[in-house]
Length: 102
Image (cartoon, rainbow, N blue to C red):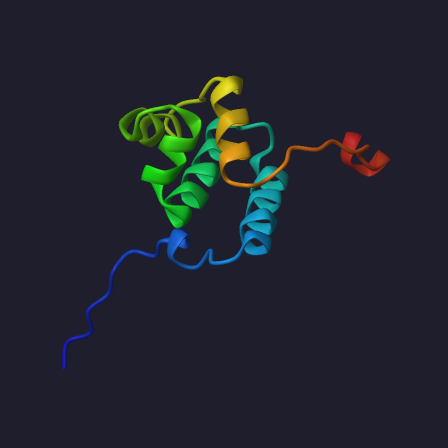
């Protein structure tokens, strides 16, 4: 019997707002300043919620969102803020531990 596999898609596992927020937070921590990596995480979450709906809410086309959130480029901060808002997430800041600064 042949085993068939398919590529893993995290968007298929992100079901609740809490899971999406935790995923984005983990990606931000792992990104090490890589904006494209964070954009890809936002793209994963947007696909989980439905890219058409996110496009409608942001006023951007689906095609431009797919490109901006592909992980191959760094989208504008304006686009990031629109997507975060459309996803029902919020952007916040905190103080890093001294060990993180070093």
